[in-house]
Image (tube, rainbow, N blue to C red; front, side):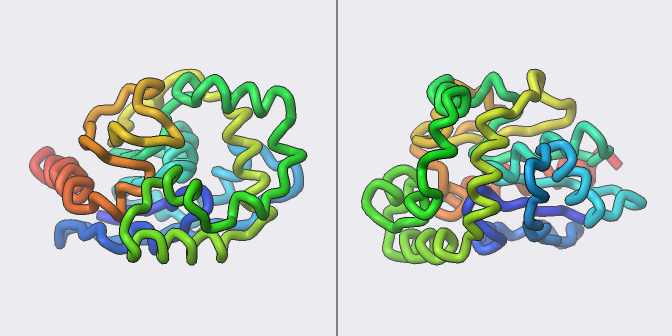
Length: 220
C-alpha cells in the first residue's frame, strides 16, 4: 500500500526522515508545486492530487500545512486513511488571532523573508531544541520558496473547511505553539510535543502511525 507524505509549511520531506513505516507500506513523498497566482487551496490540492495513484489503496500523511492539504484531498479522493500531524482538520481549529490577521490583511504587508530567519523565536515557535533540530529547521526554512510561503500563509488564514473530513486521524502535541492544542480535537496526544515533534519526538509519532497502519492490514 502506498503512503503519501505531504510536508508542512516551510518544510519538505526532510522533516519526515525519522519516520519509518512497516515493510508492507511504500513511502512516497509529494513535493510541493508552485501555486498559480490567486489559486485557491481547493484547486491547488486538485493539481497535487495528480501525483497520487488512486487505482490502488493509499494512505495520506500530512504535517502542519500538509495536513490541511491532506484534508482537502480526502474530500475529493478516497484514501484508506488520512493521518495529520501538528495540523488542523477544519477551520474551526485555526486560532482566532490568525483569522484576525487574515481578515485585516496584515499577512500581506509582512515581508515573507522575515519568516525565514533563523533565530530564538523561530526555534521556540517550532519547538526545535537540539542542535540537530535547529540546523534542520534552519536549512528547510532557507530553502523554502518565498512565493509559495506567502501564498500558503494566505490560504491557511482564509481556509473555509468547516467540518472534519471522514477518515482523518489527528496527532497533536500538548506544547504546540503554532496550533495550540486547546483549539484542536486530536485523536492522539503526545505529551510535551511541539510543532516539530515529527522530528523531535519521532519515536512516539512513529509508534502511533505504525499502529494505525498495522490496523489497516488486520482489517483487510
